[in-house]
Image (cartoon, rainbow, N blue to C red; front, side, top):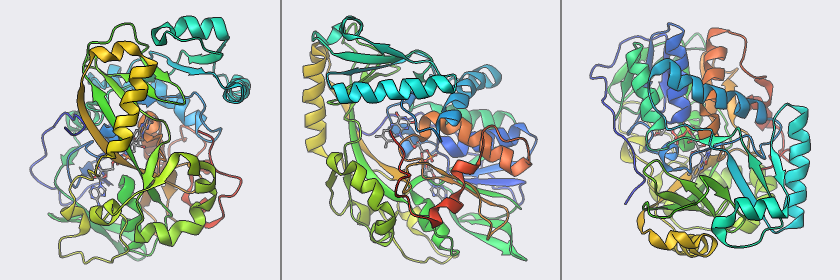
Length: 441
Ligand SMILES: Cc1cc2nc3c(=O)[nH]c(=O)nc-3n(C[C@H](O)[C@H](O)[C@H](O)COP(=O)(O)OP(=O)(O)OC[C@H]3O[C@@H](n4cnc5c(N)ncnc54)[C@H](O)[C@@H]3O)c2cc1C
């Protein structure tokens, strides 16, 4: 069974003009469109498949500040507030709760790293609690094992991946924006060097602003008009189990396996950082830039197979604007599940939390996590094409920081005071090497 997803309706008629067109209906695109529409702009959101159907419904649902890289922490903090505010101001339910995130470890090295992060977080006003052995073992009693220590981050939380992006899309519709599913953007048009339109499979929308929130497809889209955006995807496989386990923490991370309570009372099980690298032409092209990232992460990554070629999101082809593109051939990126990882994850989870033996597997799926060379997203206007704003490469953190990223995009478009310092995110930095810059997470 695939990742669960709530479906929403589509606006039937594509507008001829818009103040802004947002390309991609993942969590980043929907929040960008939502904040633009709230400022009174006429916004059209185009999504090649279904709202939320790619990474944004396939994740664990963690919205965390804990262990965030210094460059992303301000956006993570603001996002937690925005998740809460969104529910109050829109009346829509994303399932967000500040349930706190809980980490357990028996590794002195890992605990020392968390303590260092706690000290840094205190300097920017973020509170997290280091737990000694007795506290960690007590809080982690569902494991039935002793622990050397842990962390509890009380202000962090989770939202529901199955309903979050659709809920935001419904809010866009309520405030006058339009949402067009099964509508791929094939490219852009320019006039006098400035963006002047977005060409979709159903017609062209005249606009001065386009936001590309295309997730794993962003680099190949940019390449069509000469913009170099280094991006690579890692295939991550996870599973869900039915309700039935009692007394488990809402969200627990250990090095072996992580467990997150789902809205239906079941749990999502996953191994943090584990993934397969499926070679693609784009990966070979950007390989030198990703060396620092892979050098850091190689232990948890394994070589994949031909999935990347089959999916087509990282091809180097140039397509024509008047014929179907790879995005129309692959409406929803749904890569093959790595069955070995699913088996290992499940057996580790049963070992960690014996009560999970009272549940059964309800679904297993994979998602391509789109990364940048330094693990920080690329958000900003592309100087070569005024009016074209990139918001992609969320490197495994985009769900939690989706509201902040969408807000920042709206700030950039409308010239408002940015919600966070935009400089660490600007795509210009990809011209330089990422050695020494890879995010800690
Ligand atoms: C297994 C897994 C676990 C994760 N766990 C977490 C977590 O716990 N917390 C966290 O913060 N993050 C997590 N992430 C990462 C998070 O899911 C992503 O960073 C985030 O969802 C990215 O959102 P997005 O909107 O940029 O991309 P996506 O959700 O991938 O959306 C991009 C959308 O753009 C559409 N699109 C692309 N090109 C076009 C086009 N030309 N025209 C029209 N539409 C187009 C696609 O169809 C897609 O729907 C996880 C990811 C995975 C896969």
